[in-house]
Image (cartoon, rainbow, N blue to C red):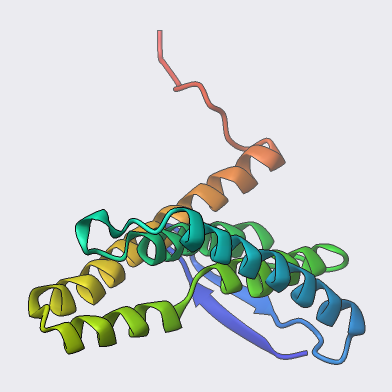
Length: 162
C-alpha cells in the first residue's frame, strides 16, 4: 500500500493510506457504489433535466453535491483502516465518483460552443470550479466536525462564560 498526504483547511497534513488494489472486496465495494451512483445520476438527469433556463442545472448540482460529499468523506475516513476502508471505497471511489461527472461538463461545453452560447461557455466551468472548491472545503469542515462529534470532542452548544 502506498501513502500520500493531503492538507485540509484548519488542519495539518493528513496521511492517507491507499486501498490495496489487489483486494477483491475493494473491487466489489467500488463496483456496487459505482453502480448505485450511476443509477442515481441517470435518474437525476432524466427526472430533473432543469432545461427551463438553458443552464445545465442537473449536472451542475450533481457535481456540487458530489464535491461536498467527497470532502466530507475525506475528512471522515482519512486514517481509517479495517472495514471502514471498504466504506470509503464504496462511497468515495464508487458512489460519489459515479454521481459526479466530468464528461457531463465537457458535453455541455461542446453544446454551448456549437450553439454559439459564448457567455455560458465561459461562466459554466468558472462557476462550477469556484462553487466546487467552496463545497469541497465546506465538506472537509463538516467532516472534521462530524469526526469531532463522534469522538466526543465537540459540542453543539456554544460555550458561555457567566
